[in-house]
Image: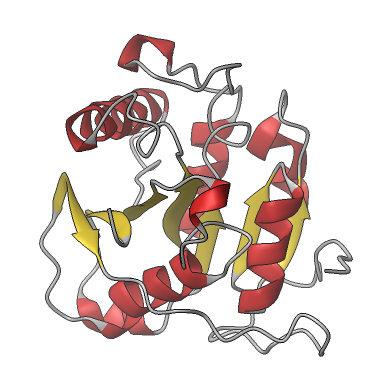
Length: 219
């Protein structure tokens, strides 16, 4: 597998998307409960309390929602794109059951292992760059949760330099791992780290403030 799997379902017209900030969200430990040995089956998708409410609130502030997740079980041969589709369809359905405004515009998934040295695995910012390009720069998007493999060019990151300027000043990244913070930093996003047993609800109030600069991070 060369590239990241992309699933897009944007609600807004292209013109509105070009002007919107993006909330990049990790999946396991942020939206749903993580699991030792990976979340491998749809019935194992368990929302963390408050996830749907926070996503709906972000959408109310004008954010596009883009999930960016590392899922090495795919490269390990545990499951493939069909299972990924089931997992993300289930996650989207559970969110919408709790709040009809908790819609996710795109899921981007790196299927590789750390040792594969791919372009897309976080802390590389490549999936965030791709999410920005798809949601804010590409007018025609096929609204489908059927995963499509998308080429990911090598990112250009100076880890020893200053934090980059993001495409939109309110772009943000929420994650529970250092790799999430690294990817968000390299993209230039505001960073919000959460405990994996609490997730998105931990930073609910902070995300509602456009003046919150996010967490400090030194790559």
